[in-house]
Image (cartoon, rainbow, N blue to C red):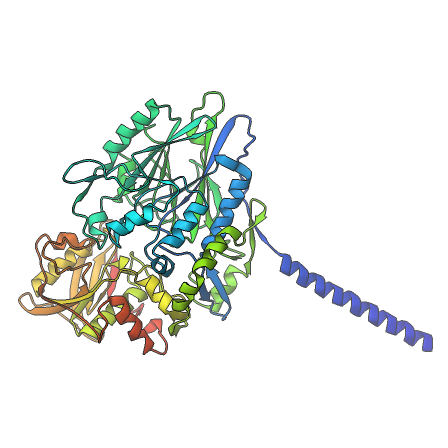
Length: 612
């Protein structure tokens, strides 16, 4: 009996140890679980016998964002998106394998936007671009936001050349001469020559707060045709356009746009917006004029072939990047266009969601959170993505400055305030309600580009608002007759630059196939009223949209409004000693305990109803 008890005891202990070991092993395996970003398509090799590949990393619209943005999930867990330290790791992996064949281009709007760019006078972004050895860049419209001299000082810090082909001085008609600037460029990689043409959007004068009326922007197609021919005469084997010019493409129901994969000219792709600058331009070009178009400006993830030309662009704030592989026939040195591959979009973050393999997700509730899977570290080309040490050193250099703003808490939200140019949204409604509240105006309206980042679930800090509203605009209140208001909104809600957020109005807008305003009424949240043609109404906006200066042209689509309208009895709205919109908003939020989305957006009672 005693022996049986001893035997039973040892069996029990053995089982316990086995069970404990199994639990430990399970925990260890879970800790070591890493997602591998890979597809069934084989990656190009530097040792390919037939093709000489040149890989190109492309970023655009970094908008001064360097550090990761922390977000709370509905469960209360925290995660982050963005972070140029992680983007630096991608570049390091590519550089280690491909050596000097690896190229990196940026297509503008680099430093304006994020608090990091603001507090460092753009230097944190320039330090990053220099460290990663950007080959060429172009000027974005927001590069001018802090003034021409600021931009020149910034460009003077670059270890790379800016390619500027379509900006001239309006008086002399000569190309502008800025620091470290070239008119087109030629890159030689082991005898394979790539011609670079750089373009900036002609929308710049109406989409920057700086007066640049002494500059003129030339039409794109003629410049491309002329420079392409010249560069080919000089021996270019391929022509790349790097441009702060954009386009947006829709998702097909069977095609998930934000899904990492390798794409080629035969990959199924969603339809693109035909009235966007880049789309119009690409369809004007004759076959063989250019071989690749690296875009920006529209903040949309694109990896499409338009008129046979591969096009890449990314969302704003460094949340994604993409890589294109250009293949050249080793015998003829000619580029083989139908063999071009696009890899991405590459998620820029610490961890990605297991079932979606991206990190930038709009997760409303715990059910959706469960559906996307847990957050896990991930590998790219077999190497774990983590902070690149050389880029982290740059971040540490400016961290104390950043924390001064980041640790200044204003309020909090347990909702996700999204922003969109394509439909009514909670962030636009909150901001226009805020403007009406502090001004007492009947109506408020702003451009969608006023907001650079959403309000993510969690703490809203001083840093959040500086990134949200980096412009330093002022609030303007003025008056207009009812008939003028109807005409103004008929122009604005054509949707050419996206729909404009409003407060105090209710409208119906036809969204497809062409966008136009069908109905417009006053709305106080309870009842609708007709707008009387000859009655005076007060409107509040920013001086970017409706500048007081009689020589100004108005920003975005307000430029068309200014062809026939000027604000009546305009005045700047100050609150205490605060004159800048951002400062007024910061102190406004200090007095709000918590922001709730349902106060600003009601699916059943929309301010702007879209119909087809």
